[in-house]
Image (cartoon, rainbow, N blue to C red; front, side):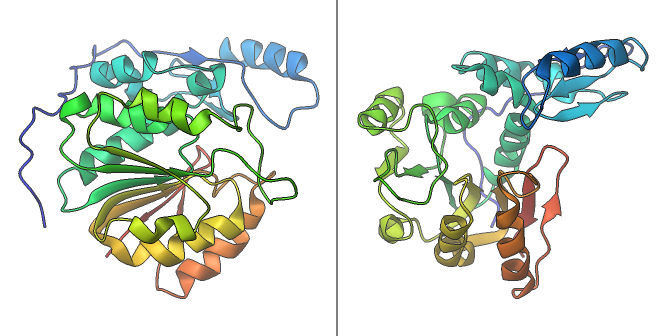
Length: 265
């Protein structure tokens, strides 16, 4: 069911007809010689048409780089950058923002599994109204891990991270930051979900999240799998998630950003 949205949504800034922005941020993963790669990419950028994007293992050119023409997104993204990796994944962040723009018109809450420092949630919120965002947004994460637990450690995981993230959203009454292990922590998850972003960096946990949450995604709702198309540390996600979705009559749309997307029927 489409719902009326009571707050003004961001309007696209009319782009200049002949100006295409380039983007080069040398943050890459899985590279044996980063300096040499940067050297080569800088040389390539002189050989291709405008509209190149070299970041986040994503090298392309002749693109509109539309995220940089969206002034509301640029403001929300730039003010929430707290690590160079956040700058590098700008295309991924814009996919989240545009899919949230779609989902905000649906009858359902927003959910992110694996919210880490809360940056992805904060960008979406600030793009779509800030503290006036009209849906509840649930962020789930373990935030710290016991020894021997299967997980992908991140720099800021550890005691205190959950409270730090909660403080980040002190002025956002619709945000619910929930600490705990999936699937048990999902006992209070919303019954209707319009936007589901899964970024758990661990295949078993992602399947466990889908088992609980996918049936709650409303028709037209969006599921975004952050690492689905990454072949290095995360290939097992694809190997488990493909048959899981296939059994339910769905096919994941692989995106060149490394994400995967499913639209719920």
